[in-house]
Image (cartoon, rainbow, N blue to C red; front, side):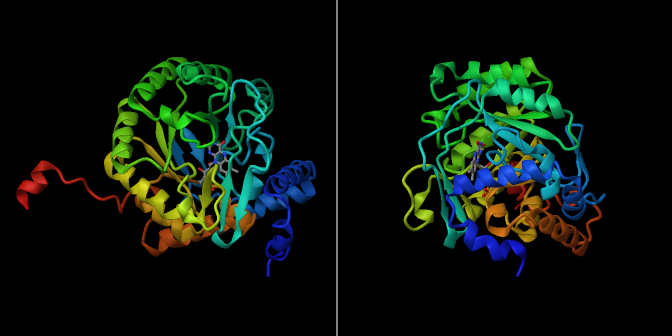
Length: 363
Ligand SMILES: Cc1cc2nc3c(=O)[nH]c(=O)nc-3n(C[C@H](O)[C@H](O)[C@H](O)COP(=O)(O)O)c2cc1C
């Protein structure tokens, strides 16, 4: 039994938010002890040519990234490689600091390997986080900022919040992820509409030449996903991240009726949304998959279905700090097993071809 497996029951006795704060403290302390920290990087950080990719001019040593929400205030970035991550997102960051929703606001569904959270963008605000990023940027791994509007900002003024965030952070991160898919800020998901997205991308593209991505909710109807995927491409989105957490509370027994569910129960829908998006826009923008990725087999499936990069959060809670290394090692084996010399050869091989008029005439 691994050390993590043996202390797991103890960890699960602690409130999830407190446990996360303890992990943050441990990682911040550990990075000040190179004797402990450097061997961790050596062990967990996989940097093999078969997994190296250049996307948007940035070097990704391996495809597994820190999902948004794990490092909300950008306090743990130096520890990312020690956990094996090849890149990551900080945030969600809002213009003004905000407390988030009232506690408790995170719960485990242990038997489902799931987490439910209703944090509501608690963060120290752009000013403080920018200063923190300035100290380490550029970092050895690509860093993205997950950006969201303040709870008190009315929807009709939301664009202003996103503009402030991009203007403030454009010199201290490598790319942006527009977050209008979190279930924990009232009205935010209403912004997942044609008018707002077109206007938003027009404004943000004027402010920076750095990549701007959009993150989708898994709870949209398939038709809407198709529309928004095409719309995102038309508006020059540099990437689409699928997906955020789900409010489909039927996925677990005794759900709390607020917040979003992540982890294993989200796996199926997250893959389905990836399939829908990839079928529509694969090759036209970069697709990133997140939601229930907890093994190399699942990661490989997502790559074959069109994802160039992947992210995870909940798997760390259930599988422990070695999970990113395990996935990367397994991915290399799976790629080689199937005769691929490089990850790029596998990306999208399973994406269903769209039936064109010509194809249907011929059949
Ligand atoms: C505690 C927690 C906080 C999160 N906060 C954010 C956030 O601030 N912004 C965001 O875009 N996604 C956030 N997410 C969603 C994750 O980035 C990810 O999309 C989702 O958890 C699915 O991945 P997973 O199953 O690997 O956890 C959060 C997830 C969790 C569990």
